[in-house]
Length: 178
Ligand SMILES: C[S@@+](CC[C@H](N)C(=O)[O-])C[C@H]1O[C@@H](n2cnc3c(N)ncnc32)[C@H](O)[C@@H]1O
Image (cartoon, helix red, strand yellow):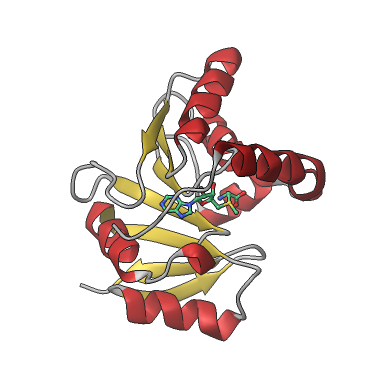
């Protein structure tokens, strides 16, 4: 896959900024509930960064669900695994990858693609992998405040077998076109 990870120093700096400025302004649980993250669901947080959404999702899906937190930067997995252990969350798995998830076909109910689409040049390899792992009735939730809405929708619909099927306050929701 044609993507390069940022350095550990940059990742730490981004995590600090997000924890100070971004996440305190967001109600992570409410955002995820509106998307349909609920007990028993399997969620893939692709490009999870510091993992705040992964941790919030892991609480919401409860022990009957599962959350995969994936990032291209190996430090992300280390930090998120430590945070999950501290919180006693045993339904969170980490994946270090720039594209391939290693998950089975149709294994995931909800994919979170938050604040990463603009990094994906080209988006096709990742969107193809997300389509493969998403269940037929699954949802791809995309947020990217670096992109205009039209551009975001075009990148997803032209980059993979997805069609816009809804919106929440935070994200665009896409369903699979089979
Ligand atoms: C701006 S952060 C967003 C973090 C989180 N999703 C959020 O919304 O708070 C983008 C993350 O995507 C990761 N990333 C960028 N390209 C990637 C790729 N091809 N595969 C996996 N992760 C990637 C970066 O390492 C970074 O941690």
